[in-house]
Length: 372
Image (cartoon, rainbow, N blue to C red; front, side, top):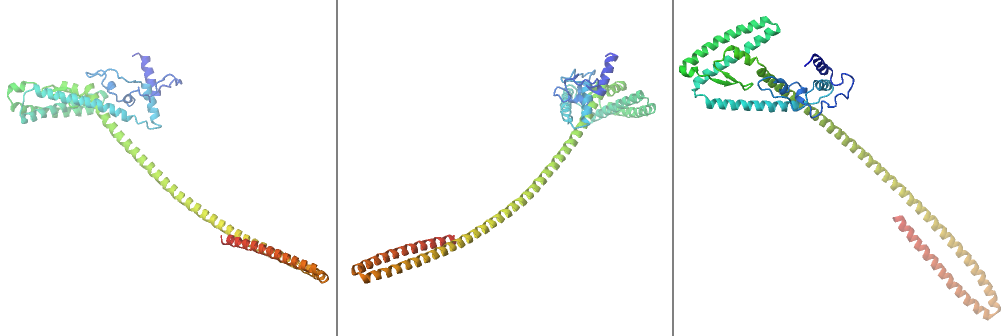
């Protein structure tokens, strides 16, 4: 990569896709499904193991430093929860690595000679001391490269102590088995990167292995996976707490709404009762008014009937007097007057009975209305 390309990549990593003020330069956003979420979190195995014996090649998803910068800027404002996708990716990769480790152990158990449990324990002790020496040497070299000479010297002193322990363990292992079997190379599978380690490997090879990019890359991937698991668990716990809090607030609001609804129902019921009372009062007033009006009408009818009967009696008396006066003069006219009086009397009685019947029927109707 040229110096100009390196500068461009560094600017993309620092400022994102919009570093030139042109937001349309990068059409693919970091939230796209085609973008590798592990790359955004700087833990993709394709990047970490690049150039090692287990180089995985290019990732099938998009890797861009500018998109990582965009993600880092956006993650400060809101939680995107990309850790879950990255955790699933790393878990599948580590599971495949552990599967290869178990297969290598089975293959070694089939090819190497059977040894007793005591001899196997002594060989295991020698392997552990070899690993300690390799890790200490790798750490000393790293500290020396960083310029921390004093710490590097301390690590080398620890290496010498572990070497002495290894020499004693090797003597015990040599004495516990025949010389022919001891010269046979005993292999062991590294639990971290599934590489083969020999029982008689020298310190330089052990240091190269434990300080190499492959072993350190697997350590970085496993540590990142543990960190992602912890982060995802914390975020899920926080989300559950927020969800529980929102549910409690919603239940509280619903409870308050039910209380207010019951109060409103009580108010509506009291208002409806008050309206019914007012309607009953107005209905009773109307009944009293109708009764008083019916009484007034009855009184008026009675008065009218009395006045009619009085005028009719007055007219009949005048007729009687005139008829008597005529009858005193003529006997035939006297008989006619008598017949006329009978007819008038019968007609007056009929009219009086009809008026009385009508008044009785009206009174009965008014009584029934008042009772209702």
